[in-house]
Every structure is written in structure tokens, then in C-alpha cells.
Length: 253
Image 1 (cartoon, rainbow, N blue to C red):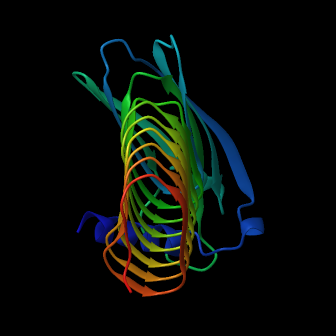
Image 2 (cartoon, rainbow, N blue to C red):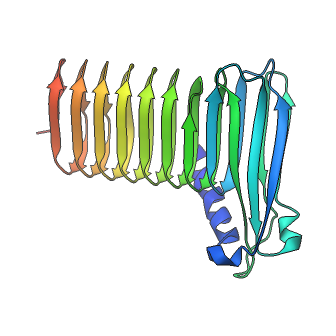
């Protein structure tokens, strides 16, 4: 249900930015700084535009830099970074104007966040590429666009509509629900669970514990270097290859 909402947000964001890139004739820098002492949870809402989040050891504030793009000066003035705090939780959101449904109208906001590496992070994204590194734990609910995640100290959960997923160097459990697009996961201290994959190849390597694919629609599955079990419960079409699995192997006939 949450993914459906995010995908709808992505479609709205896309409809707001259907103009070609060279139609964004206006751009302007945005920046916000927030004291991060006492904050343990960060929620980021990004509708249209790229998103980068980097966790930094010892950082005591949220440093948010952005570039706003729009098809007119009036629209550009409404593109903002919103940052709020409620106790130990913080919200950072891209605010775009409503009602941009004409072909010649459009807006987006690219954001880069530097945050303490102790934060648990949740991202809700409509469309656009995303790269997240060095946080305590991560949940992503994404409509479309590529996702790259590295060096997370805890668990990673990704629910994605479409676009490639690349996950590397995770100390916890990795769980993925994906509509379409290739999935690459490597160097995970915990287990990997792919609950659902509609289409696209799956590559999983260097996993200390178990690898489990619950429901795969189409596309190849390649697994190597698994410390525990490798289990595929349901596979629609595509080859399944595995090597160096120390535990039990269970795949459909």
C-alpha cells in the first residue's frame, strides 16, 4: 500500500516535470542547516530530483544543500527545502508547487544531505536517482529511479517500483521488494531476503548468512559466496545459478 502511494507520488512528480531538461531555464541554490543533537531518526521526502545522503562520523548537524530547477521564475520561487524537528525525529522534504500539469511547466529539486552516521533514515521518493551511504539503518520507499546504498551499520529495507538497485557493504539484514529492474547485493554480514521481484536480474554475492528469494517473476538469479542457506521458493522464468553455498540449497525443479 505504501509503495502504491509512493508510485502515485512519482507519477504526479513526473507529470509536474514532463518538460525536457532544457525547459528548466531557471535554477537556484538552496541550503538549510539544522542542529542534530538528540536526533536519532530522519525522514526524507523527495518527489522529483536526485537525492544523495551521506553519513559522517562526529557530525552534529544536518547540512542540506540543493539545486532548484523550474520552467519560470515564479515557479522557481516556490521550490523549497523544508526541515522540521519533533523531539528526536527530523523531517527533510522537497517542497514543489502544486498543479504543474501543462507541458511547458515543471520543477524539481536535487538534494544532498550530510548527516550524523548514527541516524536511522527513512526515505520516501517519487522519482530520480538516489545514493545513500554511511547511516545507521535505512528504509526506502521509492517509485522509480536507480537506488545505490553502501556502508550501512544496520538493516536495509527497500520497496521499489522500478529502477536498478545496488546494495553493498551492509552490516545487518537486507530486505527488498521490487517491481522491475536489476538487483545487485554484495558484502552483507546478515541475511538477504528478496520478498518479491517482478522482473530483472538478481545478483547476490558475499553474504555471511542466508539468501532467500520468496517470489521472482522473471530474470536470472546468480548467487555466490553464501555462508548459510540459499532458498528460492517461487521462480517464474530465468536461470538460477549458485556456487560456494555453505548451507542448504533449495530451488524449484
